[in-house]
Length: 255
Image (cartoon, one colour):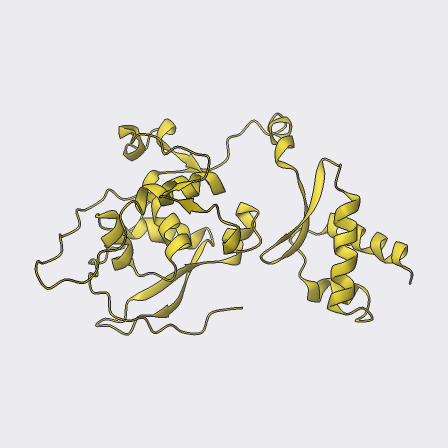
């Protein structure tokens, strides 16, 4: 099979795929006749072919896929008048802390935000497939360590955590952190945020304004204040905040 035909096969498979295609799946298209370096070369060539189109070929955390370019979004939104899901500041800051400081325990998140992390918030993020337990800290009670997933990166259109917006001085480059809005904690529509990399970075900048406090024996840590749970039905009680910060011993993560 020549290069032109191989690219046609790749293009067809990727355009018809419902999910990002990993290299192992792409390799199966050619009955393992092409190795990973050859496939990557073909993919990069195909990516270049689509440079000036409204659709682009991108490599995400879980594989390759075609997707619309960002500057086409406002046109496509006209076909889908329904609004995308939006999330409260509590959800966004919790997710941002996990993304930028992973792996972390609920106690770590509570120490940073100064409020108790409601169980429904963690459950909502787990149900969306954005966070998962990757191990347990070797500490009393062995609290769970949370990290983000490949699904989280795919939904943000990122290839890896290194693609998250960099925080410079607590604020992403070129952006100003907006003044706190009281409505952000009210559950009102204007207080909810979409899941976008820029919004996540702003939430991280707000939550990580002060670094994690170093353990101190001079004064007891401030007790986190309870935070209102997300408006989702649940009967699970909120876990007690963990304030100890012993060394981390992590379980093996997925590749």
